[in-house]
Amino acid sequence: MKKQIKAYTYEDLKDDILKLKSDFPETEVGTIGKSVWGKDLYYIKLGSGNLKVMYNGAHHGMEWITSAMLMKFAFDFLRSSKESKAFGGFNAKALARRATLYIVPMLNPDGVRLSALGLPNRLPIREKQRLLRMNGSEDFTKWQANANGIDLNHNYDALWQKSKEMEAEYGIYSPGPTRFSGPRAESEPESHALAEFTRKHDFALTIAFHSQGKVIYHGFMDKNPPRSYNIARAFTKISPYQLDSAEGIASFGGYKDWFVDKFNKPGYTVEVGLGQNPLPISNLPQIYSETLPILLGALTV
Ligand SMILES: [Zn+2]
Image (tube, rainbow, N blue to C red; front, side, top):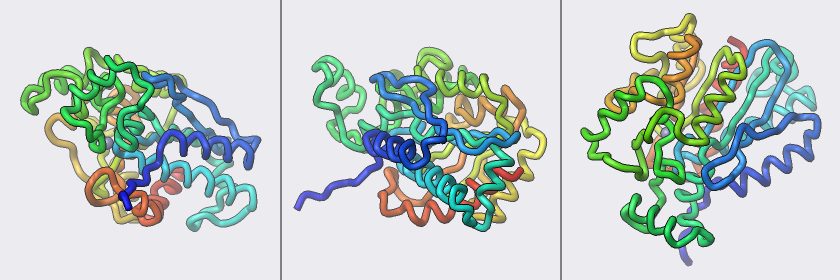
């Protein structure tokens, strides 16, 4: 029997969004924009409190397990809230009154498609050839970028030029599977959409979920927004995550970097799970239970 890698794809996300709308019709679901290939970039709004928080997942193609985790969290949150049940030691109804949480579960659906299922058949031959050239092989499992070969988490306006300058040190000269920061900051529809969505809302805290490493990144360069460090430390006390600091090309141009730099508020990158990317979907239960204290705790800051 051929071994199949079961991934959480854009189709799975769309199914979940439909189910969520039918199970919880009062929940606001919308889109912040579209991907290069025209896929919807969904958001889900939970709760109605004054504390505005945003979680996003799958900036990177092979990190689709973060989308699965965020969708499971949305369902569990809504169910617990509706049934007035305890959720991870919290009163979900009280959390919903305290916080408004926006979840953008899959920022890079095209990258997820490439990593999870390979090249789409319907693509024009020219574009197929272009992607094959960029990737250097038919195996797209390790693809991180969007459909233009731009790494979305190197495409934000936070010392973006530095990220650009360092590419040569990593042997990166053109679009490809990872780390190419694009022609300019926010050149890509996905990163621009998330930046616009962020500018429109006054988020007190944001978390960008990636995989893997079981670590939390906070701050940006010498910027440490008020309470940012203490909240990160609190996360390490309630979960098995450790604090880490970014090095090299990963230090610039990311969503967390941009959020901290522009708004001077707590922004985090949380690397879920441990192992080789793409982490198998069978890791989800453990990742979920390890990360749940952070997903809930960030709504109480
Ligand atoms: Zn990542």
